[in-house]
Image 1 (cartoon, rainbow, N blue to C red):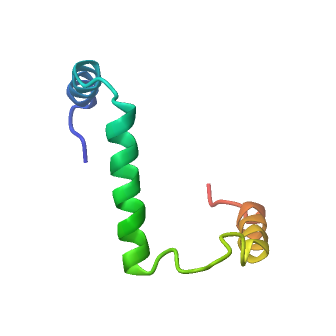
Image 2: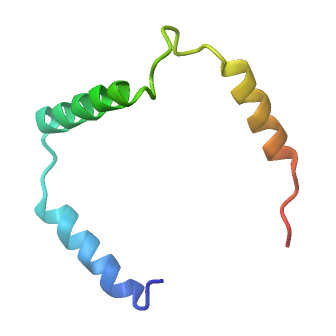
Length: 69
């Protein structure tokens, strides 16, 4: 639980202002994370769209469920 969100917001703004985005570094990090996910077996399917129908159906069902007030 964040007791003082203003301090956190100031920290985040200072951090993002001081850190300039480097596209090459971002791509390297992405590729390493992607490779690691494959090693863990999280992206094991040959066809990435395989099973998308089930995901869409589940998302539709979850959206139709009303939330408690």
